Length: 347
Ligand code: 25A
Ligand code: L14
Image 1 (cartoon, rainbow, N blue to C red):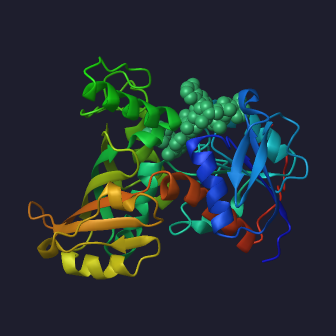
Image 2: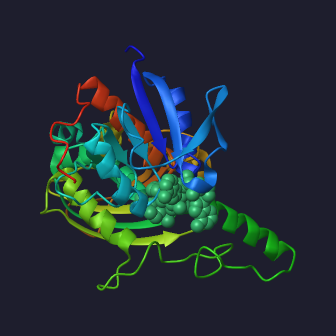
């Protein structure tokens, strides 16, 4: 691929934005130029890119002229406000926030699962929630092979999902506890160090959290199948990087644990790491910094006719956010889907 594109990273100073820059460089994305944007408070600061640095520019509505692809990770309100201006300028947005995911005009894409959905984009493409991505990349081959009727998932999510401020909170509180100081809670409502909070994102009217309902709704949208029943419980654990998930699936037809291991060992984006005798199973500490969704503890659910239990772990900042977004951008280039046909869809 020739290096001809101009690419922007919006929210470049954040935990995910920095990883996006690193991923673009590592994967040799065909960019002639990369521009870094963040809020006014970071304008003029520098972020690493390859062996050099980029000077961060303030994001404004009129910066998108001449930019082919903008990858956003600057929070929902920033995406809501600026992504339509990008699309209007002919710049295709890959957005990591929750702002556009359930919008019918926006494809919601995991490249290993539903790349075909990119074809009808209108200039804004949504990157799914981190917990949804790692689950769906492992479940799609099972869905294709024997069907899935119902999914029951419980998550164990790292503090880096909340960005730099989540990472700082766990660090600070851990030091506070060891120094016999009262841990201060700035980011989470309760102490996260040496604790577990069954609470991610805000509570909704049905008493589920928004994070839990993202898993329910995004899974159906990505599979393009509203008949799959999904229920989720999302918890925050005192881990820096890497989300873990216990996933119970009721399948349409029988699949043995052995068949599942064979199937998933051939699946793109998935690594089976499952040998109970050798005490081999996926863990956040070892998934951090890697690209795959690791699957282990594969067992048949003996309480129902056709069911499986899986334990899935992935780096939430990479496959859960930055890597998946860059893979979407790569797929857009590969499929020749850059440019925006109707620039007024979101205006
Ligand atoms: O935290 P924010 O506000 O959402 O900011 C994230 C990025 O977006 C930029 C911001 O630049 C940062 O690069 N941004 C925010 N508002 C913007 C605007 N109006 C904007 N860019 C353009 N126009 P920044 O210069 O404001 O921030 C520089 C550093 O400060 C940290 N920070 C920001 N707000 C903070 C804060 N620190 C403490 N308290 C605050 N209120 C910021 O931390 C950055 O280092 P952070 O990056 O790590 O950001 C976390 C946000 O990133 C997204 N995110 C993280 N992980 C995931 C994720 N999204 C999806 N999946 C993930 N796994 C979330 O949106 C999270 O809020
Ligand atoms: O992408 O862990 O919608 O706090 C926002 C909250 C990602 C996880 C999203 C967290 C999420 C994040």
